Image (cartoon, rainbow, N blue to C red; front, side, top):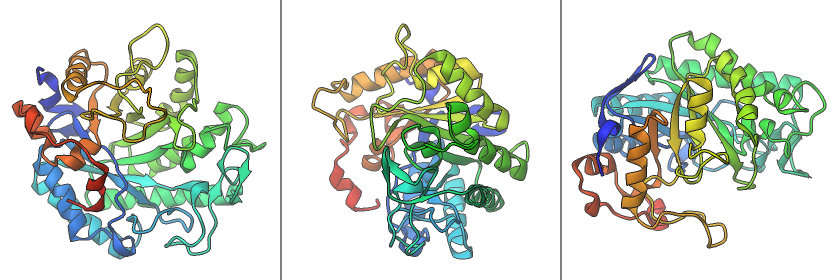
Length: 368
């Protein structure tokens, strides 16, 4: 396994990183009262010290009453939470890394009773957490504008406290993705209909954030074909449809696309070995982040026991390095392997593969 370009400094527009590695956002629920504390600060500092070039934080909820869906998830709103994030930012910078918050609204999957928000129901384009099942509030146009402004405020606050970029969470069946997905968006106004109409919310959101943070502040957009509600779901079936979907988001102001797959090595379309990040880079010319089981040797959420999974970490990483050197994508996000190994990047760079610990779900019980 040759380390190659993965560990070289890279500049993507106004974002210069010490290497091409990214810590993927992973919900950890260790922020009491929705405020990141010293434990959270040390968790992120340790990954920066361990060699990660860009940390994308766990999903951090924007300041909207229905944004949060899980207890003890951090907010990116309010004086106390912003002060907590400022400590995280400073710690990561002192360790030589860069950091971006993932701005999050869970949408219709929210259940009343989660704080903050209390009895507020889930908000969604059609009030559906899953196709065909209305469980929450169908958003009005006023609600849509209110949520967009919450994202704008979160982005501005993030920039002001020193984050190096922001990521908008548009994947995995949460609010932005609920608008994209026909299964959860049955609206008949301009925010529904075909994929172009269902993309309007995201396009307006990105445009508003871009206007607020200015032309030079990096905006990352995370998206996925699959949903947590349906692993087989797809927004587009062809490269042509993918190009039509992405072009308005590029025009709205996205700098980097974070392309979520469950397994990075799987081809996106028949007739090509390119994965999702590879196709997005090819079609848009924008920088892309690949993600999906990097450094893992088994499924975290197996479907049926017959999944197309690599047999060993070394095979997984050999293919990753080859794709990096072929410039298929620009950055590589590592998730659960970094929970098991805060210094995963440094160890892989040094060739100490045999010293890596395997990820185990029990490791999620602590923030280490």
